[in-house]
Amino acid sequence: MSIDYSVWDHIYVSDDEDATSPFVDTPSLFRMRHRARLEKMAEFQQRGEDLGHNLAECQRQLQEAHRRLRYLEERMKEGEEEEEREDELKKVQAEVKKLEEDEKSFRRFLEEHRRDEKKLPWNVDTISREGFSKSILNIQPEDKEENQQEKLKRHKTFVEKYAKEIKHFGMLRRWDDSQTYLSDNPHLVCEESANYLVVLCIDFEIDEKHALMEQIAHQAIVMQFILDLARTLKVDPRGCFRQFFSKIKTADKPYQDAFDRELDLLKQRVRRCAQARMESAMKELEEEERQKRLGPGGLDPMEVYNSLPKEMQRSFDEKNIEMLQDVMDKLDPEEGRYHLKRCIDSGLWVPDLQEGEDDED
Image 1: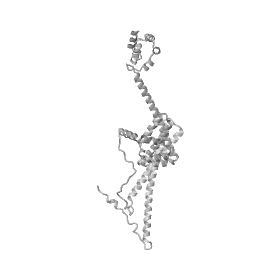
Image 2: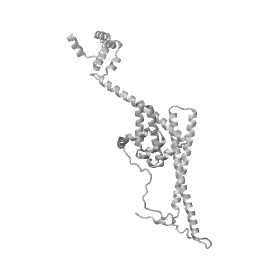
Image 3: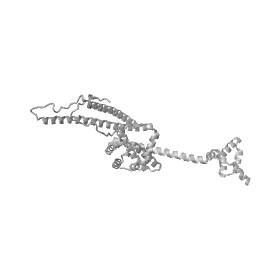
Image 4: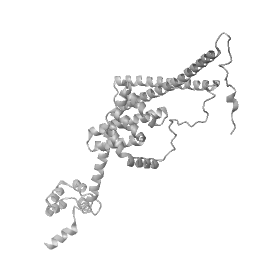
């Protein structure tokens, strides 16, 4: 690997000693010039930090604006075409556009600042810094792409290990309690916890424990906001959950409104999902019962009974064979054979058994 020695071309070391005066105390002059340079360096560094914070805040506001935009667009798709709703949608679209422009500007300013930083000459303070020390950066590593089976396996393993702890977090009601619990259990700050909290919501809704569902849903949104913040800042979520709690405890109205909207949307999705699961379970149960009822020919006796003429239904209700025979005689022969075959295939009519009973009589 070749070494780029050009970084040494602009080293400026002797800026404290290159000017002296017989009328000024030389050590004092050195200290004054050194202090001025340190203040200038601090201002430059602070400007970079301010740009970074401004970019992160702009990205957070942009994310909130996108949430509001998705919420309003969903309402419009559902048919709510009120004039007030349309005006709000246009307002949010304009806000999103402005924030996207601001984000581009902050990115450009930050890149310019970093380029200027690389051009700065080295001095006695910067050249003496450690060049090869171990640093641990709170940057989320890029995940290797997983297939669906691997994700399900990882989720199952995590939930089996930490289900009790996740459920405990879901029951917490105070911001401080939630923050303290995550500080003690930072491994819970992950996508698996958020997904399991939603599963718990659906289970409680199916059991008609609506208050518990709403409580768990609140904590699920807390976890989701932390994960969204981590994605925005491109850091490990375990390192930024305190920042979320600091923000939400003193949240301005737009931020709190965004949180409440997401919570309402989650509750709606949970109720729809719980309803769909209950309907699916009922259909499965009905199908199991239907399979048990099927006759020797694979027909459902209830379906066959409902398709019979009223007179035939009455004969089966009263278990009157003579009435059934009279009805069959009155029907068209083709229609009679059709109904009789369906009765036999469904088990409503067992001719061999009836003939055996006639022989015994």
